[in-house]
Length: 542
Image (cartoon, rainbow, N blue to C red):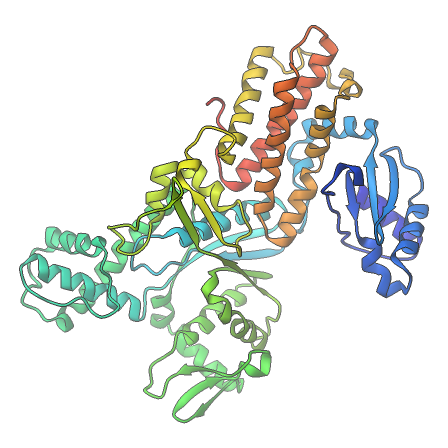
């Protein structure tokens, strides 16, 4: 509604604006919704933001939806909703539900989200878990906003790391027979390597005990990485994360994709040879320097299969390619942007960086995993505090900011545990609605419910928070930031519990009971919707 009012006002001034930024002010005194549009137009219109704001307000004119429209600060336009509008929107939320809560951001743009993509050389760690929670939630968010979305896991099943895993397992295989074979430098020391070796013994016996690693390498590499990949898939499924496609790096080698990419890069004059090495002309497309794709000894660098992989993704017709990477890969972004620009796909790549997670237990750093060797595994954490809590905690901060949480706090059944606080609000509402009997409004037609009597401060705050969910949803979808839904749900639960503690829902005044039942049912609808975006359950009781 506000977007339409501003858009109509701007059109009267001869200005077309497809997207108008809206914000929820931090302080209630500044209104219910605010827009900085006047400031963003100042340079174009060559006027002061305040003058532009005045012109916009005049063009908007009077609307029943607004109690007031005011200018604040350097040129913000602040809107305050009317009581009538709040009541109408509350009823609309209840009747339209998904249509109300899921505004269309894209009309069918195709998006691929590639996330997790862990090397199949060990268990998933917390960084993978945070990326998994982010990618899965982003998929839910964008799908509901009108995008056509594919989820892909890129399997790094070629190269040095899987070879190291194979030799590490071979070393454990020899050790279990009493033979001494050193784990390779930079090899895998975790107990899982020994577990895989034992599984090989259980299924294949000692047939490799007298074979050199060179003779047995293909079997050990193949068996070991496939076993780890099965474990990764299992951990992700328990965590509620699935994929539409699994792209193997080996496949890119075996089906000639990488070779053909090399041929095509040469035809396009995007590579050259210098000092025996082959270089990609990435500096020409904004990178700080050209990059080696084939070393002087003839071995491919990681960059060449990455070029082939991203080219294949772009050629599949996606409008946006989202890669979710660990923060330590930030330096890789310019070269991948250069690749896509060189191949005719400029601007398609969006990289979201994920910082690592620090764990505490009663304020003390959580001990390293013996099984993994040198890190805490994702499964250890969700076994300790549950999948819902783990997913929620991963989404309580921007993905590119440091995250630290205490396992003891995450297990508490109190307001200190944010996911419990939200789920408890949902369960409380279910209990009240069940007590109210069949039909939340005692069979009263919705149009006959008088929402104007919901004038207590706690009621007004809840209604205003509820009807701003579509704005939060739209902003989260446009910016690819599902953590905004997490923040919103915490704030909504933070408004519901004080309302619940101060006001009875079912009272002697039938009209007030009906209005409050409508209000809490709308809270339930929004809580369930938001939790489902995050991939978190909404329990009927706790």
